[in-house]
Every structure is written in structure tokens, then in C-alpha cells.
Length: 312
Image (cartoon, rainbow, N blue to C red):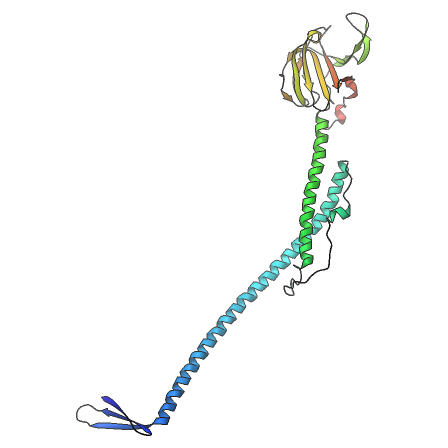
């Protein structure tokens, strides 16, 4: 079958040849109607295309809106959690303020004033940066001030504890380096500090230490932390260990039968440094013990704290 178009004044003529010898068939179509039909079809097609595009855009926008709403809810939840944590942190920092003042008082320091603890927080009222009803204005200037205040308080707290630790460490050093225990267990004081009759000359002489009578070989302990300044035989004192305690104290342990430390060795309170003996100018087995503070001999018995009241 073959189609042939023909154009007349008001009509389109459509000629088509049928197969075989069937002849020619013609169809006449009004030109206005044909154009109107074509325009209508194009309009319908365009309308359907535009509508499809708009519908697809609306679906995409709706999907994006759902995603944004979910993210918004999530953000508000996180903001509320953040706000709750900040408020809890503020309460903890307030409790820390009370605790710090207690520790400062125990360390002999003046307590912090509330003005110092506020670390200069102040200024104008909040400037709103609204983030919705759930967290409205929380990250405004007020929220920023809270975070800034907590940050500065944490720094102040750290510096405060460093100051306390420095004082306590200094006090610990003083305590650890002050001779406060008996240099041996057992035994008894056979000769005190001060003037006495010299057992060799029979004349009045100054005894610059205390003698502890004890069995030969009894362990002798360092009475405080320090560094061994001397460990050798020293004339009438026999075998002697001297300890420098850094804060002005020195101690001497004389007439030993054996020395168990060396010069320059660091020692701790209670550490065994030698054994009781009878070396040097001595009338029997005993320990001669001295305390020197800034070059002046002191009565060692004034420094010994009873064991039942001593805390290390």
C-alpha cells in the first residue's frame, strides 16, 4: 500500500495506492482541522512532559524535606544533650570549687574567693541566635559565655592544683628529710646530749650527740631521706656514716662495726646503713648518733617522734 499526499486550497488530499489492480483511493482532510489536531497533540505531549517534570521535582523536594526534618530533629536532640552536659559540668565545677577550698585550707593556703572563681565572666545580656524551639538561643552569647567560663575555670583549677601540689610536695620533702625516728630498734639511751663526764679523761665535756647502748651487729637505720656524705673510718668515731638531708639537716652514726652504704648513695628513711659496733674511742658496743641543723648540734631526742604517733 502506498500513500501520496496532495495539497488543495482548504484541504489536504491523501492518495494511497492499493496493491494489485485495486486502483487509487483518495481521502480529503480539512487543513484547519489537521493543523488543529497536530497543535492539540503537541500541546498534550508538552503538558504531559512538563507535568511529569514538575511531579518528579515535587517528589524530590519532598524527599529532601523529609531528610532535612530528620536531621533537624537529630540536631535538636544533640543540642539538648549538649545543654544537659554543660549544665551537669557547671554543677561539678561548683562542687570542685568547694573541694579546692577545702584542700587549700588543708595545705595552709587562703581559700579562693567566689569572684576569682567566676574568672571575670560578665558583660551584656544574650544576643539571640535562634536555632528553633528545642534549643532556642542556647548557642547565643549566653551559651558562649558558659563554655568560655567553664574553660577558664578548668584552667584556673589546674593552676590551683599545681600550686597546692607544689606546697604539699615541699612539705613532703621537709617531712621526709627531717630526722624523726630512732636510728635503731631496741637498745636504750646510755648517754644523753650536752655536758657530761668524759669516760676516758674523767673531765667535764660536751657530748654533741646521744649514745644508744645495743648489741653488736644491731641494724642502724637512716632517720630521714638524704645522700650519704661520708662512709669511712674517722679517728675516735671509728667507722662513721654521715648523711646530708638537703634541707639543712645532717646526721652522724658512729662506732659502727660495719658500713652498708657508700658515699654519694641516696637513702630513704628507715633504710639500714650500718651495724652497731665498738670501733674507735669507745668503751663498749653502742651507737653514737648526732643531728646537726645548719651547723649547730641539736639534741636528737627532741626530734624523735614516738612510733605510735608517726605517720609516713
